[in-house]
Image (tube, rainbow, N blue to C red; front, side, top):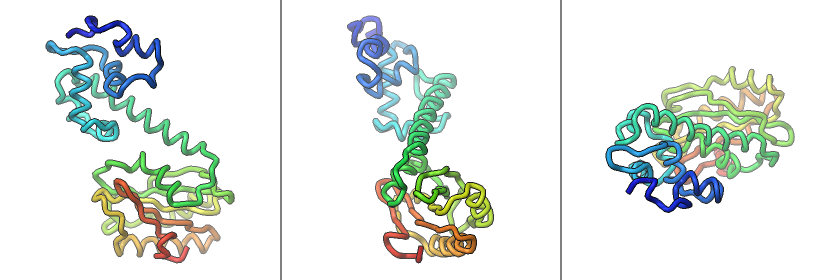
Length: 228
């Protein structure tokens, strides 16, 4: 069936115009990005096949390499880049909302919520620092290392310098475990203690170290693994 053969108010563009973006399914929103079908398939069929390839999950679609997107029939390079760009904009929007959130970041649960969109579905480890003011509002966050802590040293002097520049009073160290297992390694514990001591020397507190896994997290503070 061609997209024009569909009932007018069920076509993705018309449906969005009449009912708003929230009324559309993920596949329908994706169909709008694709624009048109190919090779005897309408744009909805192409979009549905693409969602099936991603296991029905936008997070997996967003993590899909451009090369794999381009392999899907009816996508190609231009459309693949457009899809990747749209999903990246969505991720950045989520991050921006988190940065504007004026709740005090005082629990590992909030840290997990803030960092999950950044770290979810990565196939490698990344370490991040969250900079907090006296009221524990988020002043900013930045990635500091890529790679396992067993093989990558955290740049402690840089973190201390950046914390002083931002005039923060507390920081939170966050990194992910792509394996899905949130328990810390010996290297995680060792480097946490090094960072804690360096920050304490300039009167900045290491509030927590949170390890983010697929559906869980580990908090050094909650588990009292290192004296914060």
